[in-house]
Image 1 (spheres, one colour):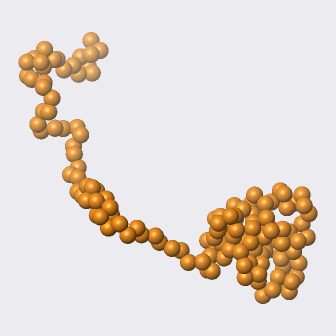
Image 2: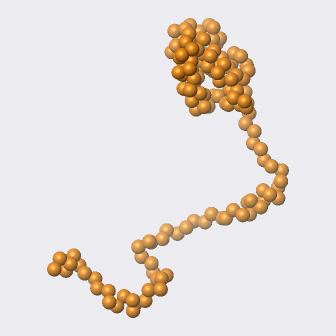
Image 3: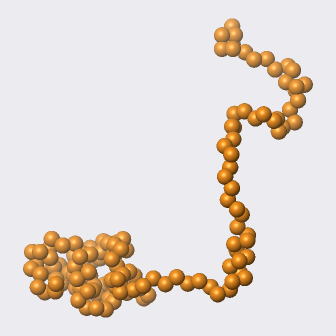
Amino acid sequence: MKLKDIPKEELELMGYDDIAYIILEESKKKMKITDLFQKICDALGLSQKEYEDHIADFFEILTTDKKFVMLEDGYWDLRTRHSEKLVIEDDDEEYEDVIEEEPAVEEEESEDVFYDEEADDDTTDDDLKDLVIIDDDEENL
């Protein structure tokens, strides 16, 4: 579907991302965001003021839409034309060192934070001999 074949009424119902997709697909080349949005504005008949008011919204749309990818130097293109590269360094020794330094993940037993069978502190029975427990009823007296 070519952009010029789409009636203006139908274009006005489309989102900026849909129109950008058509433009990039037709041109078969990457474009700067400013040029791409200018073509959208031209197709919709938007003024320069509307261009300035909506360019930030268009940028947000492109960054969140998975159909588009930002390239070097501010160019944008369709993600389907670009493959993602995974770079793995050849230095095997350095990679092995990193793996060896990582601690093994072990499952921790759930601890009862309110009751400890073994007293870890240095508290003895002598320290507690003068301790008196008072109920609420006794406290009011």
